[in-house]
Length: 280
Image (cartoon, rainbow, N blue to C red; front, side, top):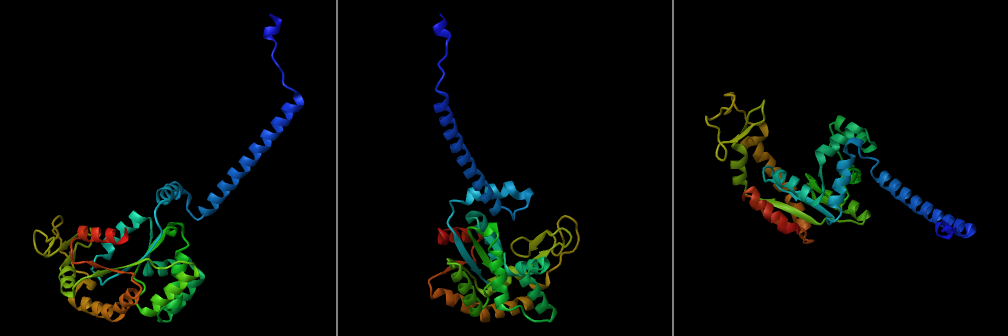
């Protein structure tokens, strides 16, 4: 009976060696986990804490998405603003609008932002090199890890060349240029028919979404207004500038087989289908 209740005790020296070995393994594994955690933390250090969980989930969802660097080209009212957020969400890209980036760089008082502000204070145009530098800075954000959508740049062939040079230094390149092709007459009908209710932001269109009473908001009964940029005179000027400056950019990228011509006169859903086919 006594022998049945006696437990076997392993050799203390041997057991001690095993424990030491296992302890060393655990310490090594623990060190590796800590290093991995520190690396992850370093990569996320620029993300505000309140957005951290959202950013981690976004990265997990986006990890399998292919990298894409896309340029949107098209005249005002061609539908770039409608398709851009859809492309951004589908492919986990960041949206880079040069105007927004310039304002952000100036507000943050980055070295390039300070130089840009000096130029603007003098009434000068911000140089192409400065704009490309600000785009370069913006591309370092975690949200741009899988690539970007560039809207509003390049507007000239020189700007396109400088952008290509900057990307080449990073071992990257533009993947696709989506050209929102549409006839000027259709654009004029689209844009000059737009009216808004200033206080609420509700928008109407004389042909596609007219108010119940012409010139009057459906809910408040207050008068509608037309933005200055939506008048025929302003639109004509903007279209002339687009054709002179930006169409050569389309030709520049066409030589490399990067341009996809979208039928921007179609409905937004139909254009979305074309965009998805071109990027698949």
